[in-house]
Length: 422
Ligand code: EPU
Image (cartoon, rainbow, N blue to C red; front, side, top):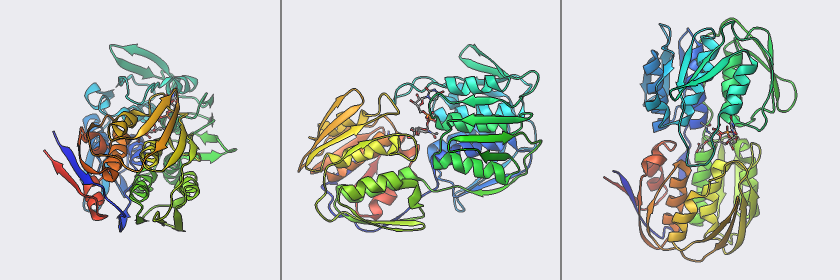
């Protein structure tokens, strides 16, 4: 199995990173292709392993998928009807497989659809009860058979009102995809405003859907008969972008990120400014200079536009090297501090009580052997190892490849001493 060897401490990174397309935008967009009889093409694709798994899932369902790494594009051709069974093998490695449910139900409303239920998750509870309640509001029937969710709307889907009890990102995307062909009008209330969800809404509207905002977190969806194919450029990855900003902060360096809309990171950039970083913004680039005294900080995660839970593990790693006391309050997932144990093995001081982490920043960390347990944990450990004195060895790095394209290539380019071994 592949591992990373990182030699540190790496100080004062310099250079630029080109940010890839957003994985969490790409996955629902690929799932949305199920709704189309025409050809659809997505550009600015990040060829991470989750994206490849979603492409494989679509092929398993019967789509023809053409991937061009050179052009960073994926073309999907649906000549025949899809198979309506989403197998466990593909959903078990990637929870976003659940996004096919809304798209399949949207297009094949009266058929019996079977989607394998994904198992537990390292982040904590990842229920899909909101998705199911929403489908039911549109007239679908649901049952669980031998680990498969069976869903179908015998009489077709009929527009209705659904209020999410709590903001859910994939829940919103799934309900949008299920509603675009539902008869009449649907209202989705308390939706996610994550840029990736807005990307899906833009794409759907561009293709002929009728989705309109009726208030800050409410959309009105008027059912249409068909969507017309076309091409869509995926937005850039705000989580990848923040991850590389953290490399600059933990090494007290300077970095320029290209191909990123700074508006996707408003809360995060405010936090970095409060910590003492100099930040210059243009419409699609961010320059950060952390070559000065960096201060501790208190943050709380939340749905967009708040500080993203996905960006929290990277900030936590940075704070282990910021002298003084910092505090994090995680409000989305019950188990998002997996990196803490590994960072502690490098000498970091992090104490977790419930959903709160208290970090007492140290002058030095030391290299250690670490095991990654999820996507963002991988980058958090990489950050610790980058700043630690001596050698670190990180195993199970395949978690990182699920969401970071060209990971060690981008890190090497800005001067990190990292090597992948098999
Ligand atoms: N929730 C429920 N019931 C539901 C849906 C959600 O109780 O039916 C709860 C969850 O347990 C959680 C909260 O609501 O406590 C928010 O979950 P959400 O549904 O928003 O998460 P998700 O859609 O499954 C997406 C991203 C995650 C990201 C979260 C939060 C994708 C493919 N995944 O997950 O990304 O952490 O939103 O922003 O978009 C990552 O990229 O590393 C990652 C884990």
